[in-house]
Length: 75
Image (cartoon, rainbow, N blue to C red; front, side, top):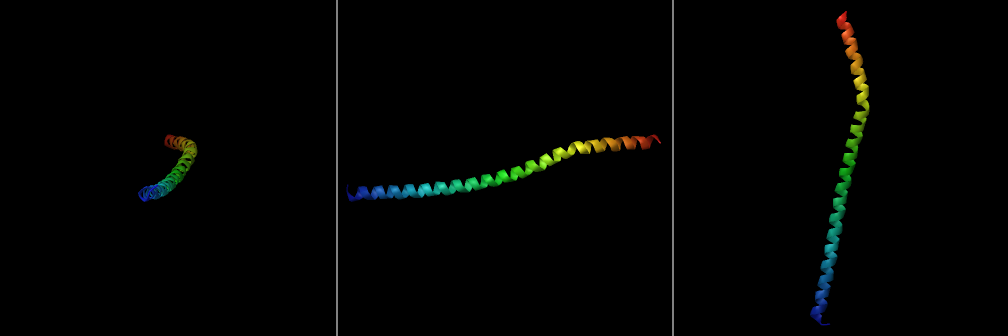
């Protein structure tokens, strides 16, 4: 091998290493953003589930209040 061939191989190896490092760094940042979004969405789902569990109770209370108002109106 001659000197130019060795330099070309060295440049190719350095370029590959830098590219690999960049890809790994970009992927780790993207994964961090994705994990943050998943946490946020999980919190929103928990809030929604809590709301969905409370709604039947509210509906029963509204029905009871409606009956009481109707009874008071009849008096």
